[in-house]
Length: 212
Image (tube, rainbow, N blue to C red; front, side, top):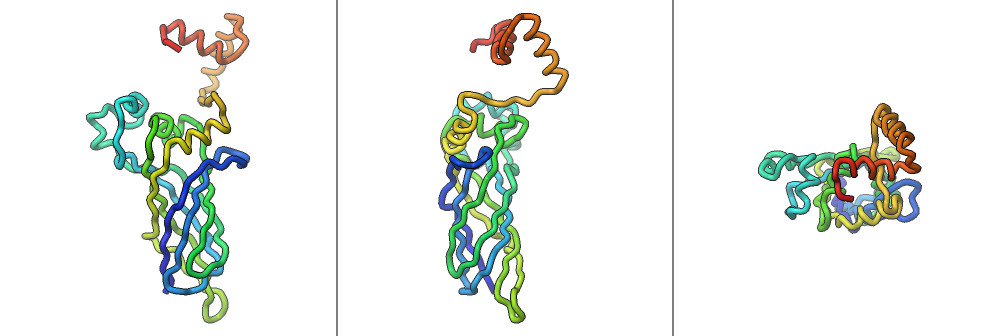
């Protein structure tokens, strides 16, 4: 019976993708000696925020996600970051494959808000694998499932995510707004003769005495 061991060798910013993407380099080991023809691999990637320490500077950004620090013992829970998949070519014993991790800078997404709030260090993440394995059976191909307990942990450097975002959105960010808010901003912009959206937001912040 086939048995599998998964490990994550590296996670790095993908410089040539069409959209923001990290790439995880996976190592898969088949320990029974059976030849694998292919694996249709699926993966859930979860962030485990309770497995790291936080500095005082992190608190303001994390408050919106987890509440005040005295509540973190109850609120810091693992959460789903993304789901992804890859097609693994045939191998015997050990192979390595790239797993695309599509990312977003949308601040409505919990993972993006969390990664933006944490200034430095590493983020504990876990890869939970599933999928279909195609092997050589008695009558041709055999089909089995990736065991439910296949997983791999990794410490993702915050700088890898920051480098990826900086390459796709240099010195900028994205905030999703309701249509009525966009309309109100457009009216404010026109009334005050402002030429850019950045000037509009800066002007509004100035009226509230917010330092920029």
